[in-house]
Image 1 (cartoon, rainbow, N blue to C red):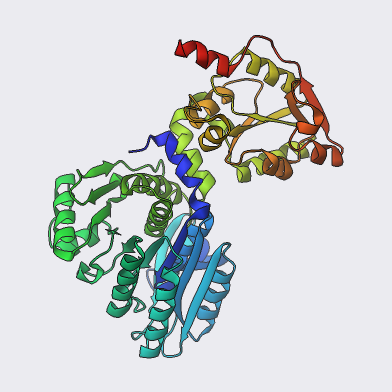
Image 2 (cartoon, one colour):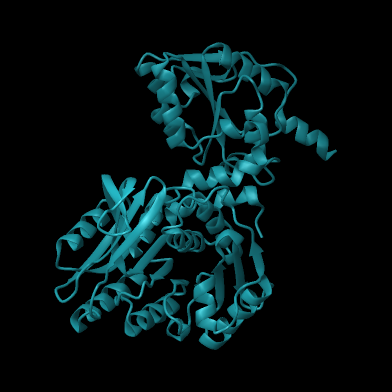
Length: 487
C-alpha cells in the first residue's frame, strides 16, 4: 500500500488515463430560495425562489468528475427527444477532455431530478422518470459504440441508476469486451441482483444497497465484510467497495484482508452525487495503474471533499492533492495551493498592488543555503511564491533515491518559513507553465545560473518583469549532505 503523501503521485498520471463511462444520464436541477412562511392552503412551506441551476446527473456526473480530474473520457448515454435531453447533450459537450456519444431514443423522456433548497436545507426532491426500456435499435447502437470505445480505454465505468440504459445485454457486452481488452470494469450498481455484473472488477454499493443485494445485515464492520464476500462469491465479482456514509468505506478485494477506511469529511453539507465521485476516482486511479486499495483511498478523500460542497459537486485533482497533504503540512498547510487557488490569491495580491516574486526548486533536505536564497528572494517582493518539484519530477531530474523527503514534507518545511507566502507543487520538469500562468513581477534564481539558462526569464522580461540572481551561501549542498550520510 502506497504512503498517503505518495498517493499524490498517482494523480499526476490521471491525464494519461482513458476511461469509458456508460450508463443512465439525467438532468439534475437545483432550485434555491428562502422559506419565510407556511402556505395557508396546506401545511407546506412556501419557497420564495431566488435562483436555479442545472447540471449533469447520474452517469453524466461521473463524466463531470472525470473531466475535473483531467482524465481522457468517452461518455456514452441515451437521452429522450426533448428539451431536457438537448440540455444534457449541451452540458456534456462542454466537458473538457470528454468525447460524447449521446443517443436519442424518441420513445423515452429524459430523467430529471429537481431539488428544492431553502437556505442550506433540501425541502423537496421531485423526480421525472425516463419511462420504458430503451428501444431495440438504440440498444444495438449503444452496444456497438461501447464495444468500439472499449478498445481505446484503460478502464470502464458502468453507472447504473436503473433508468433502462444498462440492459442485461449492454452490461454483458461491456464486461465481455473489457475482459477481452484486459481492462477493469467498475460498477455503481442498482437493484438487488448483482449477478448481471458477473466478471466486474469492483462494485461500489452503499450500505443499504449492500444489505439488499446480499440479503444480509450490513450494520457493523464484520457484517459489511460478510455481506460483501457473499456478493463477490455468489455473483462472480472480484471486489466490493462498500460506502458507509459517515463511517467511511470498506474494501473487500478477493482473498485479501478487508480494509476499513475512516471517513475523510470534516463537514457534511450535501451528499448528492458522492457515489459518482467515488466511482470516477476509482476508475481514474485504476486506469492509471493503481492497486484497488490505493484507488479506494483516493476515492475516500475525494468523497470527503464533495460532501462538504452544495449540490451535485465534483472534486478536482488539486483539491485531492491538497487534502492528501493536509495532515503532513502542519503550520504550512494554509500556504500550499494548487494552481487554481494560487491564481485566486495572486489576483487578490495584485489588487492590493503587491509585487509578486517567484522561485522554484526541489528543496530536498532544506539547508542554510536554501534559507538564504529564499530570504533574498523575499526581499525583492511583497509576496513570494515557491514552485516545488513533485516527487516524480525530482526522481526524473535527480535519479533514483531522490527525493529524500516527500513533496508533502518538503512543502511543510517551506511553508513554515516566514519568507515564503505560498507553495505550489508542479509535476513538470520545469516551472515554465507556472510562470506563464502566474506572470510574477520578479523571477529569482541562484547566482550560479546564467540569464540564458533561467527557465521563463525571457517571458518575464517580455512584460517588464525583473530577474534577480541571489548570492549563494558557500558550503551547502543537498547532494553533499546525502553523501556524508552515506559514509
